[in-house]
Length: 466
Image (cartoon, rainbow, N blue to C red; front, side, top):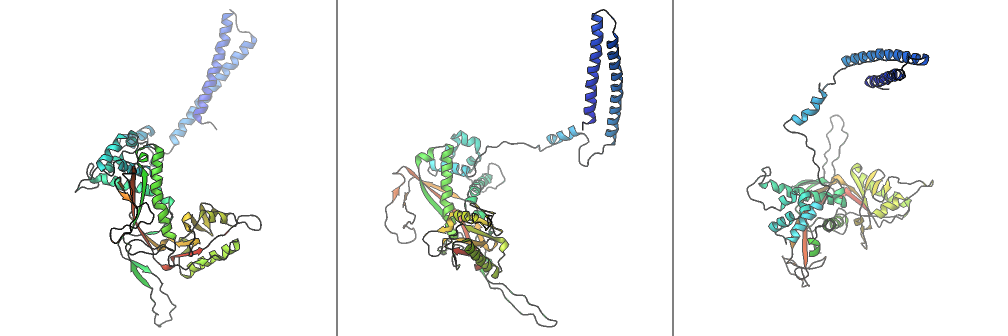
């Protein structure tokens, strides 16, 4: 239905057209030097009557509009003058500013920071100059220049031009961690965060409550409690890249360096977190969450065997008073795909919420990772792991540090034998200088531990098929 204002406009346009027709009739008779004939008289008089009716109706519409305006109620909080109210934020001391920022993929900033260091061979001052000479980098990510500036002593994190620039470094590393997080099992889990080197209670058993009769003594019970702290464990990755790649500032080179940095850390951490063969090494590394857990061997490969084995894991958790609502499944993408393809007798999916990227299995979230398969291991093989997230401690400083060297000589092995604290085994070394390469070292401080030994259960040798 048109508004009153729209109706007034429509009738005014109709009136103008009618008056124009009257003028046309009179102009024609004048040009021909005669009076109006019978048909022209009837049409002219009809137009006059119509104009009169339109004028009267427009008058009524305007009066009706005025009454509606007088009866309108102002909404609480709305400005009496809409135009003035709309302009009010612009007149304030702190105007709302719309900023357009470049669309930079996560992790690329950290890759540019690393590439600047690589080209400068680890020298911060040279890295700053190199970065500033890259116009595209400076236009899109000027905050990296602040990170590369040499820090000064006795500053604070609020004064501009002083130590506040150090905060950019944390943001830069955090941005890379955000990119890394969805690539790792640890990043997808909602573990209980704790600080490093703080003693915490570790509960291996629960107390018991009893019904007590009137005047009877209350039985005593005790929980089995120990204490532990998570020290600073260092996860470090070392890789060599061609100097030609480091000198390239193209977007594809940035993505390649970023992905290589992420791969160095993510794959290693996932395996260390779930491999049952990974035991704790004092003052070096934590045990995996499955280490020391008695595995449930898969009873078969069919859907019925899957139901039986999953029920066994869930019963283990329930018998230990673990909160199943906090649990998460961890399995390989292929195993998740096979489960999603299982059908019932009617040809419908047994687990409709499952897919190759996870989903939900029996109402419990599923995380997929190829690291849940340890080929050739007698303790695991392909695993389906059930983890109570809130019963696993995680200490993580959320930072990644990068160091670069062109002069280093490196053992190009994944099991280096050289050590700075004891005897070494002779082996061949590769010079970064001689091979025109650069060594890139990424380090992250992270540690984890189960709060309760029953926080994890898993199936080994899982090979369920649709």
